Length: 335
Image (cartoon, rainbow, N blue to C red):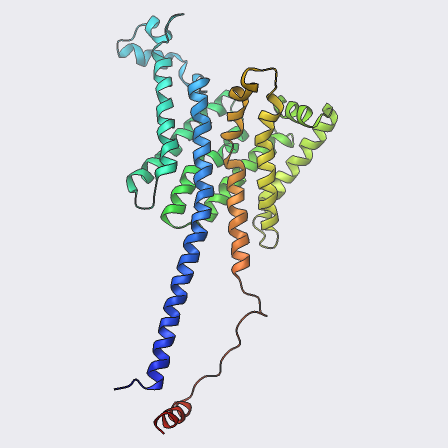
């Protein structure tokens, strides 16, 4: 028995809806992939940069561990003073254990590349890696005479692994992921702004980087820093204004990249071994979240804006089909 026209129309409508849903799902997956890759790169580069610090240089934990309490703990384990501090030829107990933290950072770097939505154990480990970055940032904070902006500025780095996990667990376009990224960006720029605007003593390296990179004197560098500090706080507020948040995220991406790149640009020289890359390049790499997290927000908001159809492109409403229309169609079909 042949299907009636209403049934045929219903079948076509159902298949069309299924095709549309499949196309939307495929497009959403493609959008999520690009956004996830940005967050994956941010976390990976952050851990890779700090891995180099642990391996080649010395991590900043000394301010926390070179204390009597640490030695008392080692002594309770049967470690003598010579074994604790080391000799000229060998590292001591403390340096040995600090060097082993390098492998934790190597593992975290690999995790950022291998973690997938189905990898629950890896995602839990990656959330735990935020604790490593938190301890590291706290050590930097203590070493900076407990200046609050020093810890706040590291917020983007601390939250980078968590953002990757949220993007995999809930989706890169999910509201929770977006809000967490906004918090990370605000922490980075607010911490930097407090130093740049002069609310806390501006580090001399800020002046040095601007003077060397741009070839300007101290007075000009100071003026540029104060202006940058004002813009840092303006960006933190502007991302809450839908009309201008795309521009704010775009500016934050560029400024975050330039401030990260300023370290190797100002420090590297042809006269140094390896052009000084071993000394300065990692300073830009570990700061990748400072510009990649704003880039994630910029791309996300651009896609959201382009996905909203304008009034002119919205399809015209079709008139509702009445039962009389169905009856007339059925009579025409049977005749």
